[in-house]
Length: 208
Ligand SMILES: O=C(O)c1ccccc1N[C@@H]1O[C@H](COP(=O)(O)O)[C@@H](O)[C@H]1O
Image 1 (cartoon, rainbow, N blue to C red):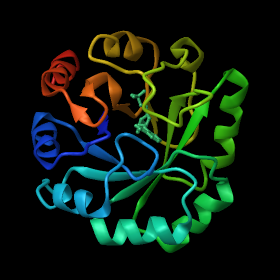
Image 2 (image 1 turned 180 degrees about the vertical axis):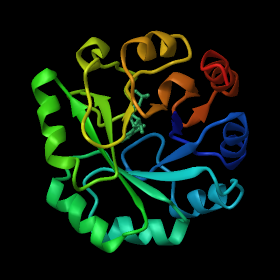
Image 3 (image 1 turned 90 degrees about the vertical axis):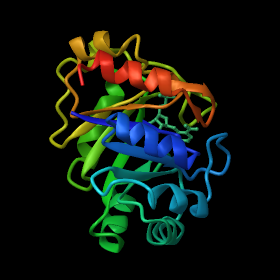
């Protein structure tokens, strides 16, 4: 199972988290986020990472040229679209960045909202389900209703996100069978400052 730790702002923490076992690291490219990092900061972190660790840039309602410039200049291997991007937008982005993993994040309000995942499965590599928050786009620490996701099988690989922590991950994975998990605020001291003790506890709980 893939394990993505998101909201990395410091190169030394990126290296430490990769060596603890993360298979992907996420960098927030949304300027309003307290976890926002510049292209130069991503470049500095990425330069020190082993090649087998995926480097994902998180965007929300950015235009294709901005995403493409950031990917090319910082060495990202994937993009996570966390805003209101349409399936057509995902398809256009894929034409521009054919080698880059496209992850569409959907913020799920209720079981009915799960239906929209079918519109995206053919245009993206991976889906990511996050909890809905009326004011914030992500990094909220709010969990999804895991029971509602017991039968979830979108036709492409998917990440479970939203309020996951070392303390609730075993319960979450006893109910849901995603291809990957994504954690941010649940392994932080404060926004953008990862707690390496919590990250180590996560991998211990995962039996790795
Ligand atoms: O973390 C942020 O600040 C952020 C800002 C804008 C879009 C997405 C963001 N984070 C993503 O939110 C989910 C869940 O985070 P949490 O575990 O509930 O704290 C995660 O995928 C982050 O990539």
